[in-house]
Length: 259
Image: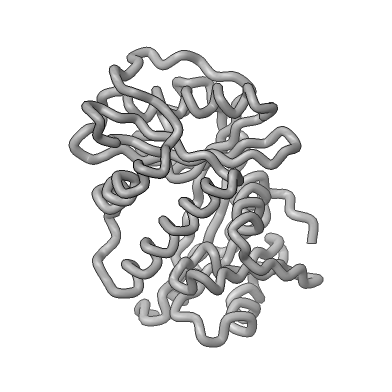
């Protein structure tokens, strides 16, 4: 299966670097992350739009013990099938905007902060920032997911596969993001986040710009970022010169979701 979606191509890049197992079937791809079974989008199937009707059965066959359902759609135009049918099955459809840029504009309001790559001593603050930004309901499964995801990000940074950046005020990390290069001209942003108490101060826009300039200097030709089309952040990215390129669709459901 040749993946068309720019978003999923870069998602799969990161999964490979993280050590996930990716199986290429005739009709779909299977992504498994044994180190983090609670990570929905580390354990999912990717299908072409015309295979959507069979996708839930494909997922069930590949992940018979899973406590969730996660299906990626390898399209570029937001192909999601019949949304009413998914709703009957308790499956939600998430459509995000994929934005790209080959150069970046300087933020209109640069932050007065120390922008830099993280050092070994910064990872405790990075974890604290992630927890402060996390809006998911607390649960044992979610805590396990978050712990494993943070450990994965740190390991990838220490291996040189990804670079993590932070915006620091008075020595405290108030915003962060990761960026990974594929070695062939693509650079994908990861987990752009700002502490809730320090938003609307230009930290995110300044950090996205800083990291993007660094990536372009290292050989990237196209910067890729994925955003919720209804969230405030997408306006920040567009103001820096990112333009809408594709739409990424993900279908998901917990096993105990009402049918």
